[in-house]
Every structure is written in structure tokens, then in C-alpha cells.
Length: 253
Image 1 (cartoon, rainbow, N blue to C red):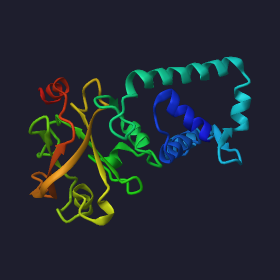
Image 2 (image 1 turned 30 degrees about the vertical axis):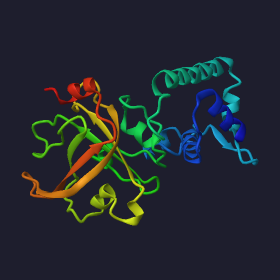
Image 3 (image 1 turned 180 degrees about the horizontal axis):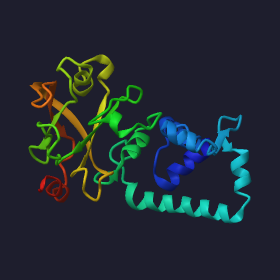
Image 4 (image 1 turned 45 degrees about the horizontal axis):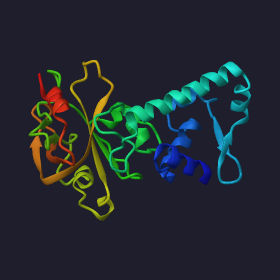
């Protein structure tokens, strides 16, 4: 186990934490995908425990690799993944697996935050709090469709964002506790911002990663115009100001 951890650090200048290792294993054992995908790929379990605290390939996968054409395709796929990582994702933001201004899908975010299960986008909504990892990704479609909610999220500047909570939610809700880190259990929460211009552009399934954000001031209660649900507005300060070209692209009509 320590051999490949050391090799990972030496070759790719990355630290393989227990959390990341567990996440990788869940993916290789078909435990991370959504339920319907797990059923569809139920035979795609590629690794297992080896009895010495490490992992080995399953017998079924070893047999598949005896086909030299298949083995070559797997090796090429691995090399392509390594190349993509080195070119686009190696300069990670702080102690995360994300790189600023790269684009990620909902599934990418769930996986790279080391969540145990992938989640449907509908269940995530605008944000979701994972208690085990104490992470809360915020997903924003900056330009809303005409039939969307009346209150929108908007950038005040490259450093500040005003966002809306889910609804119905009051300022005394658990969501507010997670976002404003008001309890002892929430003290170490981390909130990350992912923004796309709108649902209908060519990047419809991908969001720009814009770093960690911090809720400031107090939540402001509002009443949703269409539904009359309770909600609240949040003032977020960005850890890193949005790069000017990305900022101009997102806010432009």
C-alpha cells in the first residue's frame, strides 16, 4: 500500500489520503455510481482486498486482461487519463482535487469530494451538504430561464456573490447552520462554488470551479414571489476573485 502511495507522490506530486484512496476503490468496485448504473454494470468490479491491507485485481478482470487487444486498450486509457490529469488537473486548488476554472459535472464533484455515492442532480438542487465529508458544493445556473424562480443568484463583484437558499427554508433551518457554520458540528464545513452560464449553453452539464466561498453577515429571510415559500439570501465572499475572462463570460447576456 505504501509503495503506490510513495510512487503517486513522487511521480505526480500528489498526496494520496485515506479518503481519496477509499473513493478510488469505491469507483473500481462499482460502489459509487447511482443505483441504476450499479445494476447495469454489476459485473464491473475490478479490485478486491488482497489480505495484506492492499488491493488486487479480481480474477474476472485478470482473465479479461489476458486478451491482449483489451489489455492494450486499458493501458492506452490509463495513459490518456494520466496525460489529461497532468495537462489540466494537476495544479489543484488548496487541498482539494479540483483545479480553479476547470469544468466539472455533478458526478465529477460528488466523486472528487469523496462522497460515498453519486447523487442525482435533482436531489442536489442548488447545493447539498454531505455530513460525512463536511462538504457543501453550491451549483449555480447564472442566467435563469423565464419560468425560473423570481429571485436569482448574482455576482456583486469578482469577490462577492449573493445566492438564494433552497425553499421552503427559514433562517433557523439546518441549511443555514451548515452554510454559516453556526454549530460545533459545522465548524469545519467547507463550501465550494461551481457556476455555469445557463442550462442551455454548450457546457450544459459542466460547471466552472471557482474555489471556496464563505458566508458572511446574516441570512436575509425572503418570501418567494411565485410559491410564497420561505427562503433566505446569502452573502458569499470568494476565497479567490473570479478570473476576469471567466467573470465577464458568466455575467454577460
